[in-house]
Image (cartoon, rainbow, N blue to C red; front, side, top):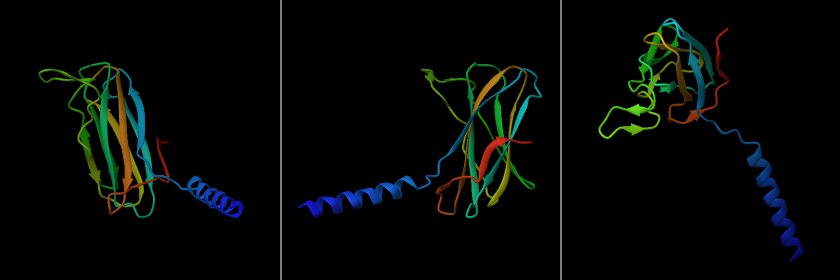
Length: 154
């Protein structure tokens, strides 16, 4: 009986160590803001590992509710994909109004592994808060952990 208990504990310890060393891929979320001038923008880089077939992303225009809309442009080489959050702030203009975060449509840029540039812009003057969601994905639509980023571009 004691030997069975020791074997069970040993097996559980091995499983625990194995699980602790796993690397779980997850989406990368960046919360940021753009200043008052219309030309305010933020540029980030995201480096995806071998096995990446595309990057998926969207943008959420967070409160305060202001007139400018927020756009995310994902760029690699000469290829670009962009999406704009058409719901400004936290309230969808429907009847009855919906309260919460409403991201833009999710778009993809299919350019494989390597460095992507992520440009966040706005349509006019006024301070804006945003949440950017991006992730590297493989051919089977599985998320992959990025090599680096998203980080502010140098």
